[in-house]
Image (cartoon, rainbow, N blue to C red):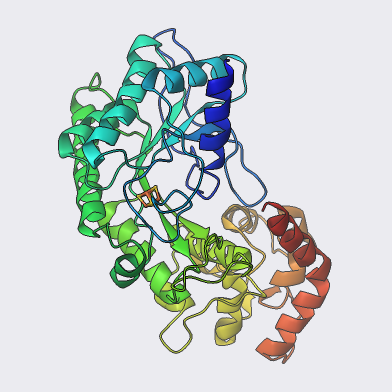
Length: 416
Ligand code: SF4
C-alpha cells in the first residue's frame, strides 16, 4: 500500500470514530457465486463490550464537507487535515483487507463533496464494483447522503446489505440549531423510500426467488445524544416512532464527544455521556424485544433514565405492586419482565415448570440472576422481599453488584 493511501487511511478511518452505527447484524447474503466472503448471519459480527462492531473496515470516502454541522469534526469551518479516497482506492483497500482476514466487511460513510448526488453516486459505485467486479459477498453498510435522489438510493440498496440515513439530532429544533444546512425532510424522505423498497423487495422475493436482494439487513439511523437538551423520554419516543413508522432495524445512540468551543454545545472537557448512552440502548432493547412501551419506562413527570440501575430494574421498582410473581404459574411475558431473568431464561422456566415445581435452586441452574430476581419472585415457598420498599431493594442490589457496575463503567470510559 503506498504512503499516500496509508495517510488517507489514517485520516479517513480516524474521522469515523464518532459514528457508532456499524453493527452488521441481520444480513442474509450468501456466497453463491464462488466470490469473496459471506455476510450471512453469524459471520460478520465482532462487538466490543458495549456492543460496538469492530470487524468492518470503517472509513469515510472523504472528510471534505460543504456543510457545517456544529457537532461534527468534519464540518467545513473546522481546521483539520482533509483527504479523499478515489472509488478504486476504497475498492482495493476493502479487497486487500478482506483477503488478509483483517475485516469482514465495509462500513462506508462520507462528508459531502459538491452535492448529495455527486457523493452518493461515488458511494454506490464502490459497492457496485465490489459486488459485480470482485464478486464480494462480505457485509457492506453504506451511509446515505441526505438529499440523494431516489434513483441512487435504489441502486445503493442493490449492492449494500444495510443502508442508513442519520437523523443526527433527536428533534427538528435541535437540527435547525446545530445543522442549519440540513433539513429533517431530507432524512425522512429517503427513509420512507427505503422502507417501501425493502417491503416491495421482500414481497417480490416470496413470488420470484431470484429477485435480487435489496438492503437485506434493512435500514438504521443514528442520533447524537447529550449535545442538546432532549430528555431520554423524547429520544426513546422518537426512536420508537422510527421503529414503528419506518421499519428501522436499529437506532444507534451516540454520546456527544465535545469537539469544539461552540457556545451552542457542551464545552470541551464535558464528560461523554457513556452511561446514558448505555442506558438508552438497554431501554431500546426492552422496547424492541421485551414488549415494553416507552410510556412504561418513562413519562412526562419522570423523563430521565436512572443512571444507577438498568431500565428493567427501574421499571420493576416502580411497579412493586405487580410482584412477587409466582414463577410456577405466572405468564411467560411477565416472567420476562423480572430483573435478572432474560428471554431465554423465561422460556426455560416455562418449559421446566411443566415437569416440576421450581425453587430458587432450580432457577439458578436455569440461568436466573437470583441476586436481582429474588426480590421480585416467589418459587415454591422461596421468597425474599418481605416488606422492603423500592429504595431499600435498590440499595441492596447496588451494594451486591457494586464491583460489577464499577468495572463496566471503567470499561466504557476506556473506550474513549
Ligand atoms: S453533513 Fe455529515 S460530514 Fe458534513 S458536517 Fe454534517 S455531519 Fe459532518
